[in-house]
Amino acid sequence: MSQFIFLMNNFLRKQNFWFVFTPYFWLVLFFFIPLALIFKISISVSEWGMPPYRDFIDFSDGGIKINSTLSNYAFIFSDSFYLRSFLNSLSLAFTSTLICLFIGYPIAFYVAKSKENIRNLLLILLIIPFWTSFLLRVYAWKVILQGSGIINVILMKLGFINEPISMLYNHYTVILGVVYTYLPFMILPLYGYLVKFDLNLIDASNDLGAKPLKTFIRVILPLSLPGIIAGSMLVFIPVVGEFIIPELLGGSDKLYFGKIIWDEFFVNRDWPIASALAMSGILILVIPIIIFQLMFAKYNFKNE
Image 1 (spheres, rainbow, N blue to C red):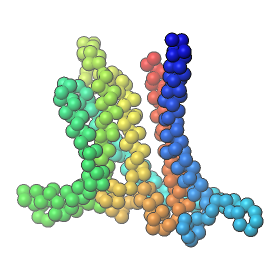
Image 2: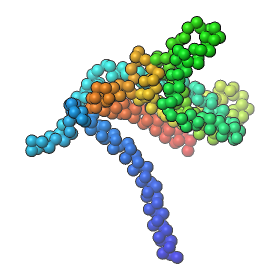
Image 3: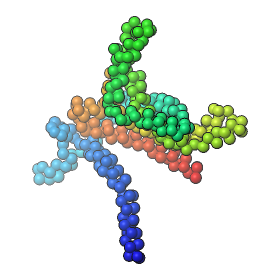
Image 4: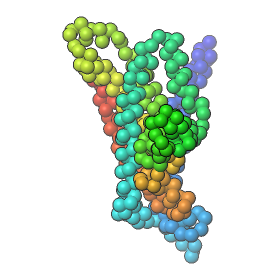
């Protein structure tokens, strides 16, 4: 019996090891290794060929030569063209995140406080769009908003307009597409925190004479802050590098960061510059992630 217990303890220790080790293994495999490869390309020297950069370590001429340079980073930071594209993407991400928050918060609160059977139905309706292709859903908006789309047809039938309105290929259409696509990423984290919210706290606040707005600001909002931060990060970070939505719905009036990286990779075939852009974007986006972690840790510390 004692030997059996000894073997079981050893087995459980091994299981705990793999349980703890697996997340780090996937993090290294799918984040740090690709990131290291991108960084290696970003400090490589461009040349014609396939791949379009020199080998990082050159063993020719009987010696070892390291072909690396930081000129790619110096070039992108000295050219205002790349800075403008990144600022355009930051503006798009910030605006879209705020709109998603203002629309998503009431929806998340309503879903969280609905009856269980209705709540499950609403959650299914929120998740259903993920069952279809992301590209197909974005392209559907292109069909809806085009000159012969359903919106222009209805407005012309009702007599509000005499000719189709141009609603495609501008910054506002891109915002519409981004908000539609990423709104569930804001709602679901908010729902996760609001569903645990005790409604008795609202009743207690009302009994103490607090108005609804004050109750929201002093009671509901602070308790849902982690959900707000998590949802905002899930929207803001991927939108900065978004390529498909600006490509399908946007125009030539604004260039976005994801589009610039795509053009450098596949049009100009300048992989070192494209990799340097990607690395710069990643490093800049690490800052809000660190801020989120610090704010979340501070919030948890206050509530313990």
